[in-house]
Image (cartoon, rainbow over the protein chains, first blue to last red):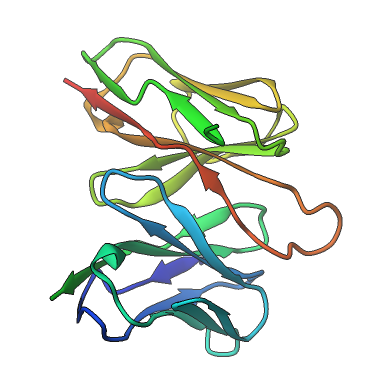
Length: 109
Length: 118
């Protein structure tokens, strides 16, 4: 089967670091993406990992370990505007993105 | 210029009615999608078109009929609306990577169309 699991909610303090995990179960896999969605807004692309390791883009980094079927999104120097839902999404090799259930991140002062 | 635009942004209608949502992208992408996001924020793919050809049709009731007049447009028509159709519908587009493995999986989403069926 193909499934993606994320924590439903995470709370973190402004200025701190937070990690949002994503685990998947699949027999085929071609890459892990991350998307951010603010309330009432559209999902927007953050990163894509085709290979194992860490990809860094400014304050955001994304990590993938295919042997562990696991990835995470790391957000540093958290700002209030980072409060949003974050989705991992996987290409299971069937030319479509399957999204995880999403993690609602709340930043507190 | 909005990259992916969809109209209308809000739709409120009665059960049994028929409604359409239009989507246009000016990014020159080959592939367009419709996703449904329910009240729990779960994003599920419905359809995918590549150069006007249907390539993905998930287990969606046949009351939902997508139409792609050209590769820049993908419209969604819904017949005999039901309460469970209430959701936010997102149109998206992406560029095919051609032969070989993708180097990125970036979807560009429209702002969404919130459908409420009463």
